[in-house]
Length: 254
Ligand code: FES
Image (tube, rainbow, N blue to C red; front, side, top):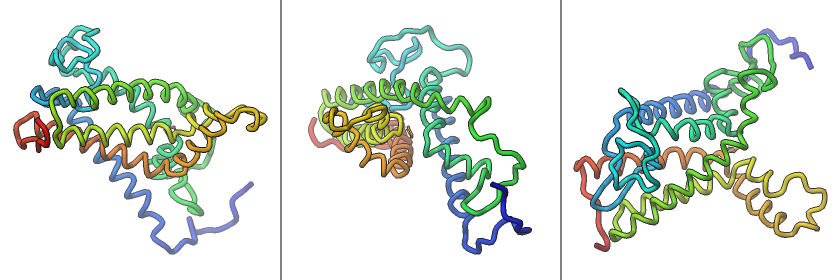
């Protein structure tokens, strides 16, 4: 349907630009932090308490601290400025970038396509996600599988760190996997895997129950997307601060 003949870009008089601007600044700051930590290549493992930051897990190359490589060192050391997280980041980034919520967020915030409801976009043509490169958004389900595997690795890291006692870092790692787990379970693909393509829910009570529970989480997908993203950075920051000796871990049980 053609747009109504309105000369103004929008008739909205509220601060419609604030949510996309906030999203843009938030995503930019998190990207800068993640890039810095990725290329820093240090302070990702606390040997004393077995804390491994989720950003470096699994640590699969020969330059990793051996004790931090819970699943072995499958690859030789990467050349030059390349660091171990670069092997896993494509999967995590792919999962977030193709996420239904983040698509909405960055289509609005970065591409102004459209920037908000009832605000015209600057682009003259709209082709949706039907052509390259945006057709690749359909790979989301496969990134979901990869991210789920990485989540299991993070859970293993968090649980195995309890072998040294209990400190604030253990709680931080645990909350982190809780939020990541809730975000992953609330994924639209996960919901579809649980309850999609069924003609009769009544004949599949277990899948119906799972679909119902996932749907409840799915209602909070945006909040979980932000909470898990911010908390991954905070978890990494905590591990980096303890690993570098800037702060001491608060210990409850040694
Ligand atoms: Fe957001 Fe799948 S839709 S993670």
